[in-house]
Amino acid sequence: FGWPRVNAVGALAKVVSSSPLGVFRRADSTGAAGCTARLDDLSKKLGAERRETLIYLAAREAAHLRLFQHVPWLVERLILDVEEFATGLSLDNSALEEATREFDPESMGDPQKMQEMMERLQNQDLAPKIVSSTDHARIRLETSLSLVEGWVDYVVGEALGNRLPTTASIQAAWSVFRDSDQPGMSALARTVGIDLSAPKANQAAELWSRLTFAVGKERRDAVWNHPDFLPVDSDLDSPAEFIDSILGETEGKDFDPISEIEKLERELNKGEDDSSDGDSDGDDADK
Image (cartoon, rainbow, N blue to C red; front, side, top):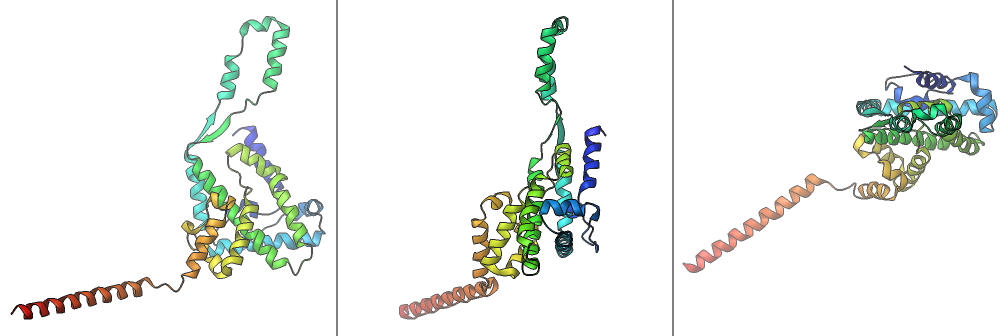
């Protein structure tokens, strides 16, 4: 299994709730989870009172739970992305192989050369690198996790904004904590090659905010009806085109394709009838 992987798993014990590991959440789960043992430490990091931190964490857990319950395909989609990424995994040992080729056995009799070689090796990262031939699955997974976390950021901010005065400052601190202060998630990313900390959660939260303003909550929520409706990685960096596409669908919501087809058929039939009447008149004139 290897010590790096053991250390990565051990570091996950420091997470404060189940939401960072939302990929493992069951769609039919009815309970949220939180680790209050680290609540005091987290409160200091967020610059909030213990009670405020607990309320914020509980709200995030409830938002995660509600989303996964109302989007039954989400868990399967995330797990399939993990499986697809895993099928293409391999270890890149090129750094170690390159260092081995540079090794000169004759230098072992020369202390100065040995010292120089050791210094070069110490400055190099010789650890195997995880690579995958199915890297698109990693991108899709990290995008989906970012959409989930960004969604939770936005809806929790909306729900607590008028109830918890410190919500804005807590959310800003939480964003920093999520991006840079979770050694367990960072260790896992180095070990398996996937960043489960939702690397584009802030961009996703901004997208959900702008989409809500543009089309309203009902049409925004409909984006979760099917995985093909969700934004892709490039949409998180530049959401304008995606929002415009949803806005265009909303403006044309009264469009009824069946009625339009029936109308076209009536027009075509009318044209054929008029043509038949003209032919009949021509035949009568010839007679």
